[in-house]
Amino acid sequence: MKISRSIKVAAVVAAAAVVAASPAFAGTALTGAGSSFAAPLIGACKTAYQTASGNTITYNPAGSGTGRGNTDKGIGDFNFSDATYTPAVATVVHIPVVAAPVAIAYNLNSTKTLYLSPSTLSDIFAGKITMWNDPAIAADNNGISPQVVFKKSASGAVVKDAAGKPVVLKTIQVKRYFTLPNQKIKVIYRGDGSGTTQNLVNMFIKKFPTTWTKASSSTFTSVFPGSINDAANLGRFQAATGSAGVSALAAKTKYSITYVEASYASAQKLGLAAIKNAAGSYALPDAGGTAAFLNAGTVAADGKMTFNYETTDPAAYVLGIVSYALVDTKTKNAADVKSFLNALLDPTCPNTDPTLQYSTITGPLLAADKALIAKIGA
Image (cartoon, rainbow, N blue to C red):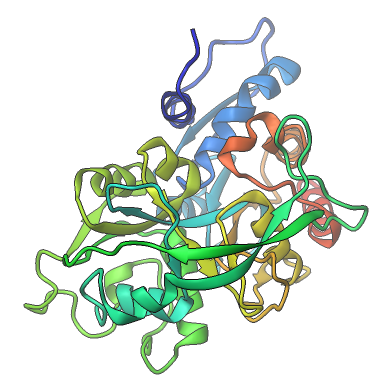
């Protein structure tokens, strides 16, 4: 019997929060919590790791805020956050071992591609654009523009060159057209502390500072321009907890839009928007577009990344992000934590299920990750 993709992804997400059966021989029980963005990858890869190592992995996808909080309290062997912060413990390092796109997902009774420019997207989440048939959205969805198609392996994984860049198979011209309803936009946002939120608003703050004037935060309501409780926003802005929560609420809410890791959106049969980049191309939230975007950024010696939202690479998806493993280099289970992080970095991990759209870590970012992992227990 063929299992549907949505059921398959849902099973992966559920698996991320439970412990697998004990291995045949005793190993180390590693625990962690944090980013729900990273959970599907951990769920997809941990069974093979557990079988090979004899260790067990328990991961609670409670959100990046929990990952940072647990790290500061010394809870867990590793935690994950989709955004950087200043740890309470000086020996904690950020290791960007997970890469994937933040998808802009929508419920318009169609999975046809919606096209959005960053300025239009900003105005939607800032509450400036309130109707789906707003002229700005209509303009984004009327015209012809280039779109990059990546070369893929037989398994569906994006092929990369020796430098770690995704290989472009061809560039096609796409006609942008979407029949937009005369309906109010319902914005679904993360109500909990979320690195996914912080990555989204960081792009807005960088590109549109006159609109997004508040300091960056993992809490959407604290960064939102004005007050989210204004009468004009009541009923239009709704909160949910975790990636699973926002995607499920969007699936139940007609005319909604949200931001979430791509596999959660696909599991709920939500549409995925193509986002315009500085080259004038509209890129989809996939592993190839994420790799192209991350390759245009820089990584510091401490592992923290700086993204280039103005890259002119036509393949770049400007909401590609990383999720950081937060690890105290003085952890008592150093060797086992290192082996687990190296397993996540191995290409066989993100390529276990290419439909999840996790990107393999390559090039300078991989070198930085290896150097940071080497510090654990040193």
